[in-house]
Image 1 (cartoon, helix red, strand yellow):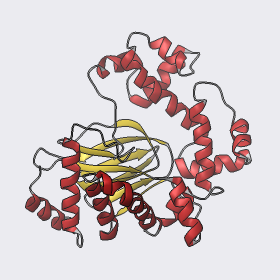
Image 2: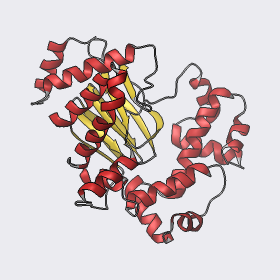
Image 3: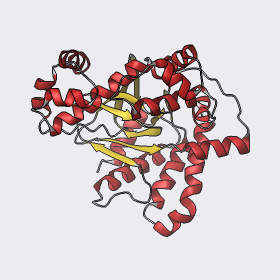
Length: 316
């Protein structure tokens, strides 16, 4: 467990004010939850992280999520966009996106402590219906970062407290989850969060396209086919997709293919051609070329390097 006084001094050095002690409690609760042997069954999808040293970049699929840092710092990369966030800050991902994550600040004395809380599209949609859509700017990336205010941190802490009281969680937990969504919807990136719950928004269009691509990643696809599925023109799909994900639909498919291939290599390191074919590559040379371009080494060499390595970025 970290030293709260040292942590408090660190917060002061970073210029954090208001809610520092709440942030300390958040860090302490994350560390305690991470030490539990039992899964966090009361809150499906909750991720807690405690990491004692900086990590190398690891690829993952960022789900719609609030990722909050209670201690340390992290870098998330989406295509050519880099997002840095640290103690007292958070990242919001509005849809499934292939990203590379890396803890950049952590030590045994002050480990990286963070959590990931799934965002619920239906909760946001209901809140939009009740409160009105507000200002919805339908532009910009599907990932944003911001400082967490005291009210948001407090709501997250109260949700974690309830995990120790299952009977109370069943009654009070849904209300606190709803409050967290509400505070995000009225925070500095309200427009992006609100778009998650609005069916005809740019983010929703791209989300439907992403789901379709993910389901069909291992076969040849055409932009016209995806556009027809989500109900927009090819030009609109391409424009929206690039704005939200920083890549084209076909580039997105390629990243999904190669990420799935890398995971398969853990189970079948000696079957490079078979792995490539399983994720949709008919040409072994093309698979090798694109794999090396994405991961820096050819699949055979990477397969050796991956043995004994856990390829899981916890999403926060």
